Image 1 (cartoon, one colour):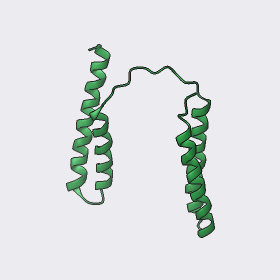
Image 2: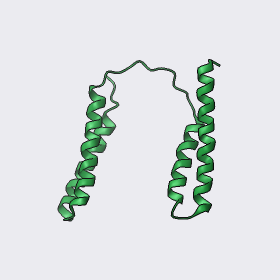
Image 3: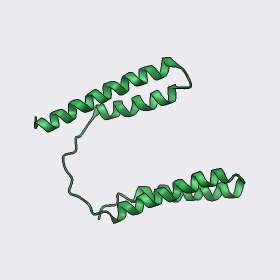
Image 4: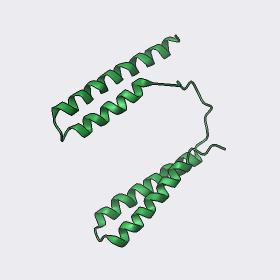
Length: 113
């Protein structure tokens, strides 16, 4: 039995506890809705993965630096917006380089090389 759902269930439980704490210490319903909604959606996602049949694994690459570059570039670009061009522009450059690497990986995988 695969337990891909268990980290999501634990995270949903932790969000539920945080919602209960916010409910005790704050009177702002906006906070309750945000945390409670995140807990419910995460629990729903865990339930989906629990009920989903497990497919046999396909080809999974060991390392993909392009995926790391896309994630790092996107996060640097988003975080860098309040700080100015000196931070978000290199983030966009890293994002573009990562997307180019992903396109290259997909092309190589489809060609069978």
